[in-house]
Length: 413
Ligand code: PMP
Image (cartoon, rainbow, N blue to C red; front, side, top):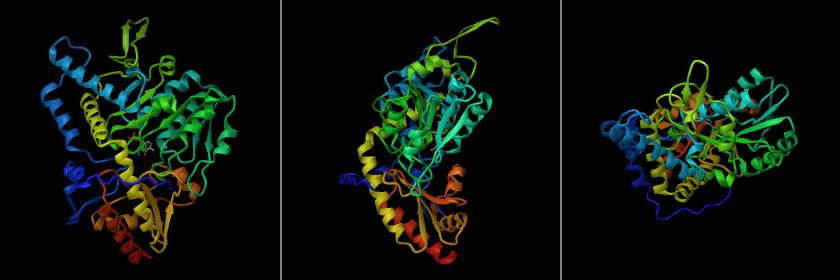
């Protein structure tokens, strides 16, 4: 694991004080929340921004000539502008509001797929994909006769890049891989993945759901064609997310959904479509969600990516070391480059039972297949126990986890 030195001036308690939920008790004990990979908690700033929007600014966007509607439109478009800066997108036209990562991927699979996939074409994904980056591609492959190819993973949880390189050919029409694995924590070598695909003029979609809360994303530096993520995993609200797409692709792709807002003119004979980004935003959007996401962007920028990464890396190193010493433990996912996830199994114990014992101690972890069933099959396991952290977690949280896992080992072993 690479070393990143901790930021000494970082005050985790000050961060925690912005998340009132972290003061709650669970099972009569102070809560330890270690399920941020499923959904992060929300700071005051995000909740207040949404509250203010609903109490003072709400009207429908883009349509009204009156001041309130213009204010709502400004709030919505300001959020788009904030996201554009956050991921360094060249243009706001390339930043689409969607419901989340799942919808972002479905949009590309459906729209790009209908336009560019034909019988015999190939779509490359990997063995560590979340179901939301498998099923949409299966659906479009079924409709078009294209085939899914899967990059295998090593026992440690890294992509086998030689196999990927060999898979790329003139029938490959798109590569869609996860940036950071939700189950293993692996940070994939996405720069190389993109470079190899682009050498053959193949576009790449990255599922950034687990990368966006932890890493600085620069879509121009990556030169990625599509990048999608969810607001709720980066301290923002549920129900809102982003699909970044290069303008050349978004212009070439047909609309995903039809309705208001995405049209220019409609007649029964012919409809013409609105410009980007509106062409892909049919209907009244989640305006408050966008406002909340904008506030989450400002929140993360206020802390700073470097600080977030240093603190989380310290937790990962500390946690991995402590957990590795527990007798009978097996850590699933030991890639060289990892982010904020420790997935594990205890000898002879079902993940669900471990999770239940931890819950009794006030510790929230996730158990199961984490929507990556093919990856579980690859390792021949039913699931894992997954502890995942965010910037608000502490070493004390990890100590409580270790204590809990030791107790579970004693009870179940
Ligand atoms: N991809 C990955 C890697 C994820 O972890 C998740 C959420 N668990 C998703 C996609 C789907 O995200 P959402 O449910 O927010 O659409």
